[in-house]
Image (cartoon, rainbow, N blue to C red):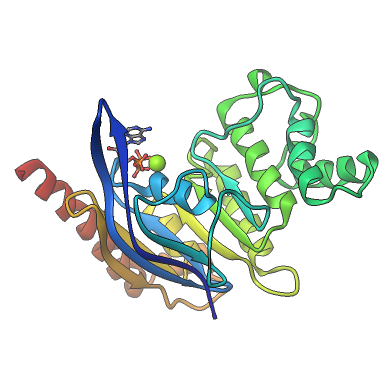
Length: 263
Ligand SMILES: Nc1ncnc2c1ncn2[C@@H]1O[C@H](COP(=O)(O)OP(=O)(O)OP(=O)(O)O)[C@@H](O)[C@H]1O
Ligand SMILES: [Mg+2]
């Protein structure tokens, strides 16, 4: 069943009375429960697609549908981790998460919401930071608070823009595992749209990888990742199939950079 559909979506930013096209004619269908990752060179429009999916921006042309309905603004069925964490600086880590949860569960008491919050803070490895403010936390810790906030919302759809980019290698592995657990938990799988620059992360996590092109402002190729789950990182990377897929993805990204330089 289709969960998310981008139908001929284009978007342009307005700048000094002119429109700067960023993405053009993007078609993509994401099935319910699917894990789709978007990769592509810096500036190709990945975060723009995520902001359209989150409802913070609207397409200049085309439609974005969720469960067959055009989206109108933001919605609690979509949990989002933005590229720049976007925590409220005047709220503690705990309050940042409770604030989001309260919109979703208005009848729950503060104590219940605080318990859910502390559980998710602990899951992302931040047991003792609930009372700290964003400016008292490192970039990687702020990113983990934003991840805890999105996970705690337990929404059908998770939109994540380079969520582990500021996190150290050990925490990153733990968070990737946690993400896969949460994706699979509950009565039905969540639908995930995930953005990364990390090809290995894309292969480890995804059902499909969408490679974007900065030159055409659209999708260059979509690769299906058929490796059995659960995927064992150290065993998988030793296989020739993994090496071939990694090579293909890097070539797709690298081709684009060469085309860009040649323009
Ligand atoms: N608010 C804005 N106003 C004008 N142009 C913008 C704005 N935000 C982004 N852009 C431009 O849109 C293009 C796509 O940006 P976007 O942030 O979607 O890229 P990205 O693929 O996420 O890049 P990265 O991998 O570096 O995060 C870039 O050329 C960028 O300069
Ligand atoms: Mg981006």
